[in-house]
Length: 103
Length: 250
Image (cartoon, rainbow over all chains, first blue to last red; front, side, top):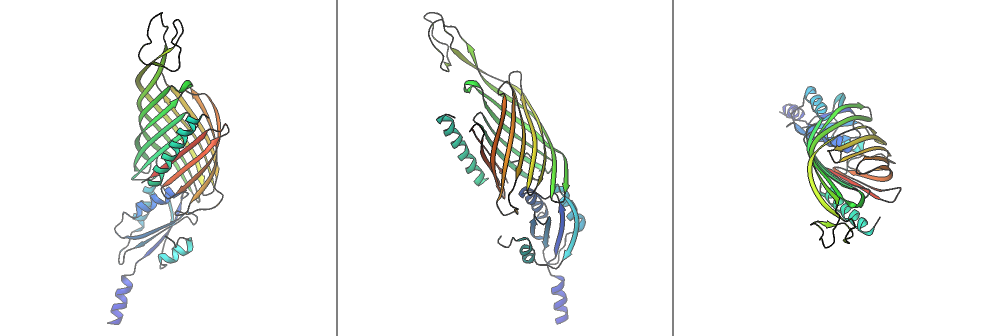
């Protein structure tokens, strides 16, 4: 039973997607990217760091956003997606890295 | 600058700041966004613009421009405009853009026509503007009218988190009104900023006014502040005239 619970808990973990994006130089850029990504029902949270050229999305438990959808969201916002990484970092860790804990 | 002009500048600036505090500048900011821009230019230009961008590469909207010519004769243009992002280069930590725009509207011209008074003749309605009413002298009678006006322009910019530079040209033309402004801006930010922090920029702005309404060059030093969806810029020209601009996006 415990094994089943742990497997279920693992499957239900929220995912973190980290993207390297070119062209992010202003607050408006960040707002546009964030707005575009928040349209996906699976999106739980979005952090954009201009200094780190980083866009991070966390998804709702058990849900995902495909690479194609992520690329489309970034392109539709007017920017260039360079790299996608799926990590197990929490959004607090991401915010700590980019100095945006006090949101 | 006269007391009246200072009062108008302060009043307009206050309005901008209040508007900016509740609401945002650039013809296109991001997809599915609206932007309100207002500018007070060195005592002789006032302009407000509202645009909506369905996509990140174009926006539609309207604007109203007021120009003071010699003697504060008002010339106003109300227009509809399409803005188009013709090209964008996204680089690591930098972005460059080419915007073009064009539109059509209505120009309102408050003209003054000389009127020679005969002995005993009363001035025509609308007489004013400080003209003499003595017979034989030449006061002025105001005759206002409207006509179709066209506008067009473009902007090239390059921006990083520390450096900003742009060249912009904007023209309004009708059979009576000819007004063009060419602007060159260089700016730098003394510190890095993030989305939620206050971005501060020091800007040197050069402008050349040409056409029937205004002629001449102008250099201004401006402080630009930007946080979240509010963008405020204020400063003065080397002649001591106030310049202010605000932009709010939502």
